[in-house]
Image 1 (cartoon, rainbow, N blue to C red):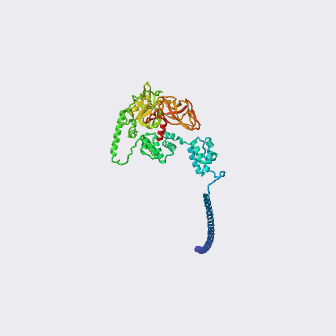
Image 2: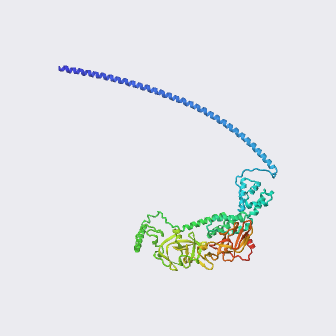
Image 3: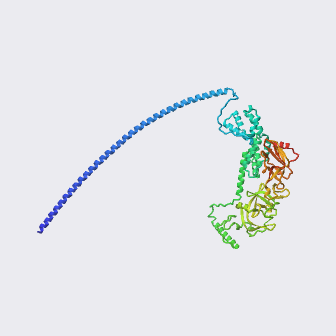
Length: 624
């Protein structure tokens, strides 16, 4: 029974195994069929894709060939068009050339006919002209006729006017008193340019003033603050007026000589004279270079030098430098211990000797009296000047100021507000130094500075004190004795090195201009010059002066010549010029000129003899 059951199970298992094997075989067969189907489907799709790509490539090649054919056709069309345009342009050029040649031939023919035809215009011929390209000018007789004529010639040349048009334009440009000249010209001569110009030259020309311009040129001097360029331009202007008839080379040589004579600075004048310039431009260029070099040299004197050390020999001198620094520190500490002063930074630099370890006020190179607390013996007559004091005009480090000459002061002082502008020149700050006057007043000394004092045409380097005083500067005996100044109270002047500097016997108010009054009634003829005797409004302020236009009363059309005069004379000659067409009357006591004080006289002018006649003076000037 048991065997039967086992046998039956074994039979069932055998059937299951056989069934499984059959199923496995059938599955393997199905997979193989499916694999073959998929492979065949993929191969078919790949073939289709290849066929489609080949067809697309073939279509693109066909399109490219068609586009290429179209481009070739367009290119051929463009080339044909270009060739047609070139042919048309060439034909037009040939036509224009032919027309131009015909026109040129016509113009040449007409020009030859005009050259052969005699010039004979009727009086009533109406001529038309193009509009001027440059605006015409106007002349009223108040400005210079020579300048206007030069401008009119330039405008007429630019507009291409002939003499007939220039005459009509000149007549139309006249105004005022200048137009009145036309009344003296015949009507048939109003179109004659030469006749009109001659009439205007006689009325408004300055040829008869040649002697006046030569005198002004000879006495021309550079004014304070006037640049060399402005001086050269004025000399050139006067040369063109005074020596218009001379050759150009002679005018150039004379202009250079007059320019050198007019230079104010003595050193610049001397250097330019040695240069022996042949014309004004060369003299101006050299004088400007010399002036610039002199200015740079003056500036470099106040620049503190800086030592520049290179790196050569450092290893060799290293031990010596170390030993020197150690000794310097010991010496500084020893001096500081004696003076009971606090220890200072050993790296601090002295502005006096450029060494480390001390400041300027402790520098051993400074004179020992600078380390004293109070400084005794500084005296001055008074802290403010009176009306009986003597002043001169000068400058301190380029700043103009009035200087009081005080022989009772043993030091030279400058006012505090003026010294504030010169901080770069301070030497040291002086503590507890007082200034004592003759009346017992005291003033505190603030600083001491090294300044360049300019008196006349010379400069002096001197150490001065800064204090609260009324005058801008007080020149003491230390300055006057050091530079050998001599004070002449009789002539109110101070002399040094052969130079005379006027002194003013009043305060700053007395340095203003004074007036010159007419001594008697005088009539100045029309367009002429004459000498008028005058007297000063107030005397005793200064002796030498230069006459100028009156600042209070001035008559239109009257010029006053700048002349160096001596105010101590009873009568002062004033040269005046009446530019008006009517006589001018100067009443007795009227202001005819002003006098500006002369700061410096290098050479005293020769005294003119009263017996010398005016004619001989004019002959001498003509010879010059």
